[in-house]
View (cartoon, rainbow, N blue to C red):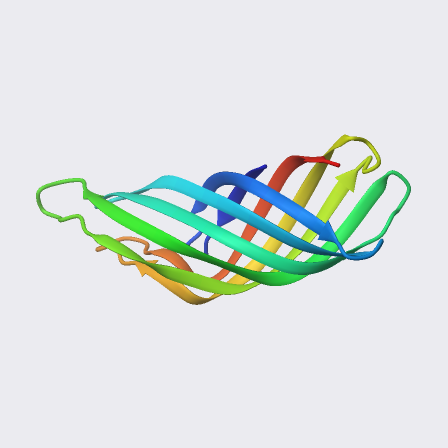
Length: 159
C-alpha cells in the first residue's frame, strides 16, 4: 500500500506499508497496519531527513453499496520520528531531534469490487498527535509531527 502523510507543518511525507483486517462479524472488523514514511525536507538553512515508522490498530464497521464497500474505523496510531538536519552552509549547524508520537486516528476507506480476489482500495485518515515531535528550524518553518495530521493511502487488497 502506498501512503502519504501530511504533517501540521504542511510537509508531505511519502511512504508505504501493509494493513490487515480481522472480521469479527459481517459488519465489524479490527484493523492493524504498519507504515513507514521518509522524506528529505528542504529549508533555507539546509535539509532535514525525516523518518517516521508507525503502527495502528482500530475498530471499524463496513457495509455494501453495490460493487463498493465503504468502511469507517476509529483507533490509535503510534510511532517514532527521527529528524536529522544537514546544514546548508558553515553559518548553520545540523542536529538531530527524535521521539515517540501517539494519537487517535479516524479512517474512511473505500474498496471497489470487494468480492474479487484482488481489488483496489482508497483510504483517507485524519488524526492528532497527542504526544509529538517538533523539529526546530532556525530562520525557517519548523517540521511538526505535532497537532493534526492527515493521510491518503492507495493499495490493493487480497481476500
